[in-house]
Length: 82
Image (spheres, rainbow, N blue to C red):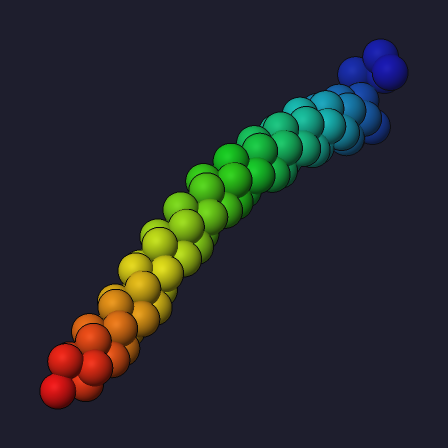
């Protein structure tokens, strides 16, 4: 709009605001996508840790159960000796 008055100024301002809003929306979309990717990455890392802890728990519980079984066998052998 080339009217060289307040309408031209208003039109230019509206065009600039529209352009700025589009740029801001693009930045927000990129930021949201980056956050989503970071959440997925961290979730995967946490799941790996949970899996690792699960394996460790399974090993320690299995070891404890085996120790209990061995103690019972020792008691049985000690009773059989007497």
